Amino acid sequence: AVCDYPWYHHRMNRGGSITNTVKPKRVTDVLAMAFSLIDGEESSLLNALDASERRLIQTRLMASVYATLSLFGKLDSEGKLQVVDAVNRQKSIFRICVALRHKVFCFAMKILGTRPALELLALVRR
Image 1 (cartoon, rainbow, N blue to C red):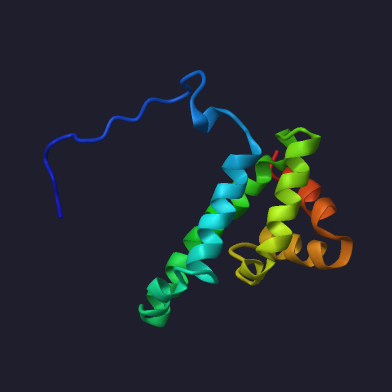
Image 2: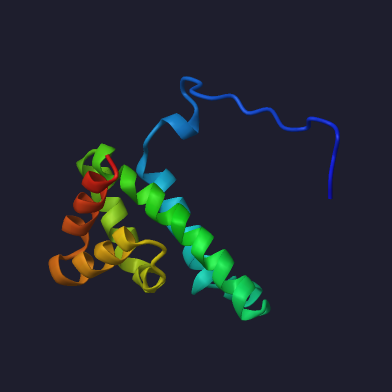
């Protein structure tokens, strides 16, 4: 559909905005949303699609997950623990790797563990 009316206004770099603050909830919410759609209670929504549509949506969801996980280095100690716990609980979604750096992250998570892999991902995204 096409609309000639400008219906969306995007304000950037607004102080106090949720998109400008890094809190563990921001990261864990993205993880939970992706897990719910890929392997959780809402996975039937994706399973109803054909394979190419499902793969496209899963790939986009995981791109958001990896981008959000790159904020790991900006969290405090308690926040990092919350994110590590969330990643460990929802580890099954990491079978979907969007880019080479994501494949490296998944490999590092298997070899080094979750926290070192997250630290590495945060370093690579700087």
